[in-house]
Each structure stands twice: as C-alpha cells, then as structure tokens.
Length: 203
Image (tube, rainbow, N blue to C red; front, side):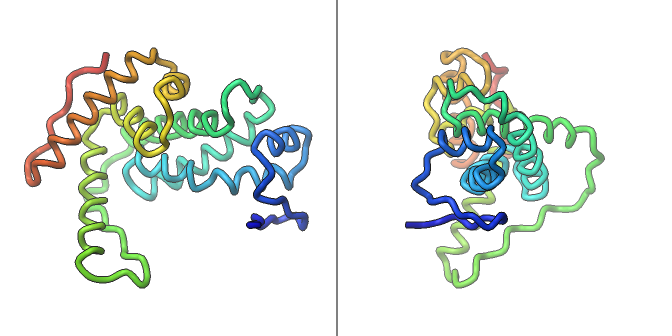
C-alpha cells in the first residue's frame, strides 16, 4: 500500500478516502490536511498548466489555489465531490492569474521550450515536445470562455454537469463551448504554420 509522505510525523494510508480526510482536516487535523493537499496537488497543477499556458503562471496559480483550498475548506459542504470543488477553486485562481497577466507588460522574450525528461531520447521525444508545444499554443489562442470547459472535460475528465457547476454556467452552454473550442483546436492543430483564428463569441 502506497503511503504519502507527511511533514508532521504521522502517516495516512492512501486507502483513506477524501471524505474522511476532509472531515479530519476541517476538525483541525493538520496531517489530514497535508495528505489531502499532496493527493490533489498534481491534478491542480495540471489544470493550471493547461489554463495558464506556461510554467511560471501555472506555479503561481497552483500556489494560490492551494492557499484558497486551505482557507475555504471549512465552507466545503460535501454536496460536490472534493475533486470537483478543488477544480472550481483552481479554475478561479487561474482566471485571476490570467487577469493579472493582462495587466503586466510583455517581456518581449520567447518562452523557452520544455526540457526533455531524463532518459527520454530519439524522435518520439521530439514529437512529444512538438505536440505539447503546439497544443499549448493552440490552447493559448482560445478565449478563456472556451479554454476552461475544454480543459476541464478533456484533461480533468469532468462530466458536463460538473463543468457547469465549476464554471457556474448552464450545461447546454458547456456543451456549446466545448464543441466550439474543440473545433477551433482541430483547425489550429491541423494547419501548422497558420495563424490561429479566434472562435465566435461564447454562448
């Protein structure tokens, strides 16, 4: 059985479910809170990486999301799955980060490509890096209204009702924005070297 590391000496087994950890953390158990944050960190960061489009902003948004999760945990009532709630918090943190980004001056320097992981070589690596870079650029070209539901659906595997809850929009609007976003991504990724076209305004 895998046991997550813990800063406070006591260890919590991976078989302990989120509901139990949440209840303990809400009661002041810092070990349970630590285990809960560690369990969901990678999911939160992956969402932030896709929504913000770069590692620096993703790190800032992830940190803000985790702080917001800690601060808001006492208000979590369990009506939604804890994972869904963390995605809602993380999405809001990303939207805040994107708004801050728009107010910052552009540095004028190209973003450095992601370094390969150790032990990975050959054409497959080049293809993987190129594919990720192309997807990052295509997602960055999407307006946030389309990007968020596409990422929540295709990366986080949320259903339409969960995405509607996360974004506070009707399920029909979720479906429409995902369809438009995916169509835009397909056009962009299928036409290398062309300038991305922005989709029509969201429903």
